[in-house]
Length: 322
Image (tube, rainbow, N blue to C red):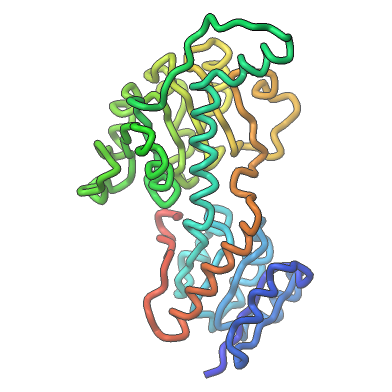
């Protein structure tokens, strides 16, 4: 049976050439305006959303009456969520895991940056100052707490454990970490305040949902070690940013490395810009060469499963939002 794939995005995007590898009897339609997407949606068997603001997706979905599979080129799907999506019978899959390696490397690099006193070393180098009266620390023996132990969280653990770090994982279903050789202990969402005081590094790798919004706020920051570091590669909305900025200004925690923010681009008046104990990454820690092609490869692999009738991978729980 001939399949029609409606691709929501700019036909000029070069990475879409990967779709040329689909079987010759698959019709691929790329449309870049809401009107075009609405017109083509009624005959789409598959909808591939490549537009990260999801405007095209929301325009097309009400007209996707015969669509049997929806796929997001991004890992985060909170912008796609709506009552119409939850009610639609087609499963939604995403690019979960496509960016795990580069984000995990950013986490380790950020931890090393402050552990080895690189801000001080670079400042002293600029000042031609020889001063070794300080003590860098090791990652060995430190505890990394990971909030959101999915693909990204586990990739962080895989890189931290060889340094001799202990891993604490916080996840919706902590029993899923039973037997995981990387995890020393797993915690449920209600145990966050129990886990945080044990952590030297707190990594946020959770999705943005109603349950995770401002999960880290004044109360949570207050129980963290004064020497602890917060690293966010999940979603900006998970952190109460004014509370974090105040904690950093008052040195109630040591440092933060932030790749995501509640408002992007980060406003020029944000206090984060002027703090010397903050790394600001403009939501680009996963933008390594070939990053978007790698995300599209997940769709290609899932297409083979769909065409053969095999279960799809990376299926999103529409009710949970990830």
